[in-house]
Image (cartoon, rainbow, N blue to C red; front, side, top):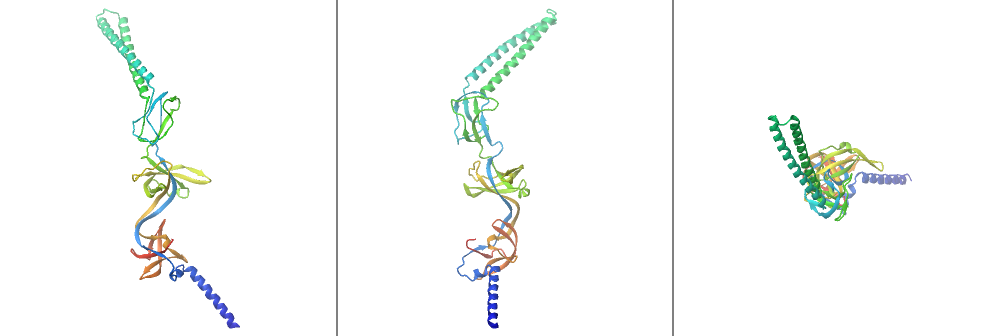
Length: 355
């Protein structure tokens, strides 16, 4: 009876030991299983760094989006703009009816000619009166009247010149030109419409310079203290998922954005290379900001590392066998982890398929 109890107790202890061995040696059962599929990865040196991941939105830079309007009232005679058109700086966007403005220019030019004639006449009278005054032929009062008339005629001439310049400027306002190069984003006025310029200039079109875009990234308050201007960043957009666009942090907004009790700060990233592709405002960007970087370090995929009782292990291919080896790890950069001890450059490690 005692022997039977002893055998039961011994069997239970063996089962417990087997379970403990299975739990703390995750590769033990894998090594004994011929059905386990593995993929081989070579240990190599790469550049890794500490990063912050955040979502962002592609936005026009300050001055890259302009609402083009009219500074005068009038009827739109011609509209040279359609949505999607590329325009250069100075290109004609619209033309207003300028018949009244041209008549005003002609009137100002006639007034200028009249003022010139009156000025020339006043100058000749003054010169004659001056000669006579020097010979004591006319009185001082008559000389002063001629001098005053000349000054008045000169002032009228300057006023007429200014009025002509002003009329010319008003006439130039009838031709609406693009202040920047870019793409027509929207058109809000049509040919034949009358526009009234008041405190706010009526908008004809919106123009966006697609070469002057940036990314506004929303960084969580827990990470914002790690961000500083000049840090490198890369981002991708859904329309070009395989392309990473390089950039650099240019500004950190001091005011927070609070939504659903989540505090974020806007970090702007300037785009350094468009790779010949067309980005558009409001595209969603997946941004990676590099905080610190280590170059040419030994690294392996993080999924190749297993843990047991605080130690880290990898499976190494040696002589056709799968050998478990302890390693010492350093930095972790997303899918890769730095290896400080335990592996050498060029060795082959094993990763279970699906990881």
